[in-house]
Image (cartoon, rainbow, N blue to C red):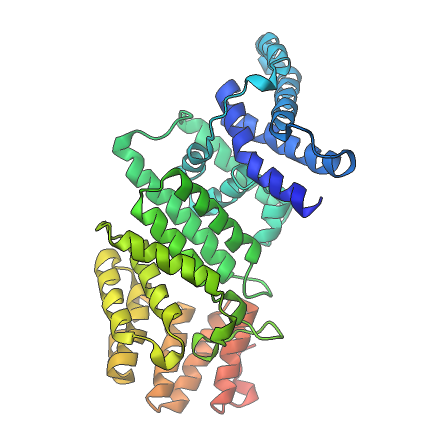
Length: 409
């Protein structure tokens, strides 16, 4: 499949699914039918050429798949007449309405865990195949297929209507959508497992989907804040690894490799949205990213501003990871001892977290406690699930003089 065909199919997937669900109902069945239509297009179009109306082609094929499915289901024989009429429905009558946002709300249903919502979103809205989603999360295709099937069954059991949530619950449902997109981007930017530090296919898809939500909800400050956060973070991606794919810390990155186009877009977006006066957690995180990205060198970083922003974010979220990041800012402003004192409040909440030990190691090194820093780097490495992060932490311990036998296996 050519890149042009792949991009077109991903763009059309949520549009076609929206039409099929609106026309026939049954989200789970319609999603399967659209997936089959996408696979058929991926096989046929590169050889025969893209149809004049590719959207109508996909709708027609998906409609036929729906009809075939209902005919095969002996328990639904009563629907054969309806199914026959579906297969003859003229695609030209399809509504031009884009239902992508409704699909996002459905796939991020509050009854689904992120582990179920993310794959379903990638398949139903992102247009990825089950095999592609499985490959992205390093699991066998049958395992991912079962996960997606269970997610669709959950939505079917909820009797969720194919429409936007009622105004009274829309804000909370939107939070679920943004949380799923945030987690998807985070997994792509710093993957939780496997041999590579990042999965650009996942982070790129998260940005694309967030742009789609932003286009549908241009006046929502947190949607804009999340998009700005992704852009400002992704701008540093190419500098996060060296020629061998090993992790490079923010302090040591070549800032000339940062993507200035993404930085300009992200900073302009967050600067605008902060003037709206509806500050949320994604906007604050984006503002922190903007401070980092605006600094020409590490020494130019406005750490007092970052410390202030982390204080605000901590009050908003109560998240211990935010406190961990604030400890770094405290260390940069007031010295490593003050940062370590703040970390002393976190072992009960983050004691088994890799980042807790990694941050503590860095602050201990800055405080001159080399042996303690080596031990903490070792503890962090033993908890790392990503090979590149583990290599980096082991290298930091070795740099401080750790003997090879102390390096985690």
